[in-house]
Image (cartoon, rainbow, N blue to C red; front, side):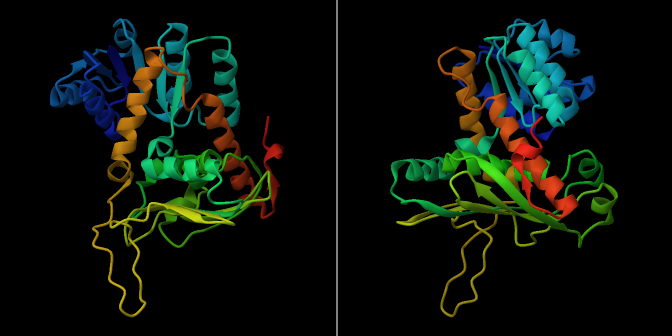
Length: 333
């Protein structure tokens, strides 16, 4: 297979390195709006570089991986689908709900597959929790507790264009709540706080947030988010049922400290960030895309799934701003 990759930033470079390591991939060609960055990444990785995006699309691709800036996602997805090229695109589909709906409307008439990158679906722990719920071994669920706690904030420039903590960060938790529980979120109540850098306030964002989600069967989910978890990168999901529980992300590198007498600390060290924590999941996700691109499997996470998680994030942002519960149906367009 000959695969293209658009966007040679940190995650794009990592994905290109993963792709070139698959036996089924004969070549990888990368491009970027900054042609010099693409050439530099290609030289480092030992892959090809296209002069620009037009040259990339003219390279007889069997699939395209999109890791460019969010505002470029809609155009690149549609351009690939129009050319009959299967697409993998990092979340989100677009920067807002109308943009996402416009993409979905246009690709729905095509049979070219589109896979959106929500890598936690391919993590072994989340997959095991989903299986435990589906098997009934946990009984009926009463509570899910999800956390995404970053050790340090991203740059101010990133925050200003991120869409906010719920849309940029919490959307992963919202997606796995749906994925693991098999249920839909119908109502949210969210709050946020700022105790860190001023640039969060300047961007209309928060650096810490909490949201209570009500699922369609009455199960409750609580999501906690922060950009300032000094102990390290901490991403977990607790799935609590009437007959048992399942916990994702509790291992020797979880940055938790017990102060109970006689309890030994976890050996650590904590994961420095999401790329390290979810490295195996990213590999599995891209391997699944090869099956999608080759026509051996349907997309495991389509644009419609990304839209549902985005709706929840949007409802949380409205709730935070207006200080009230928000039904998810309020933000559906």
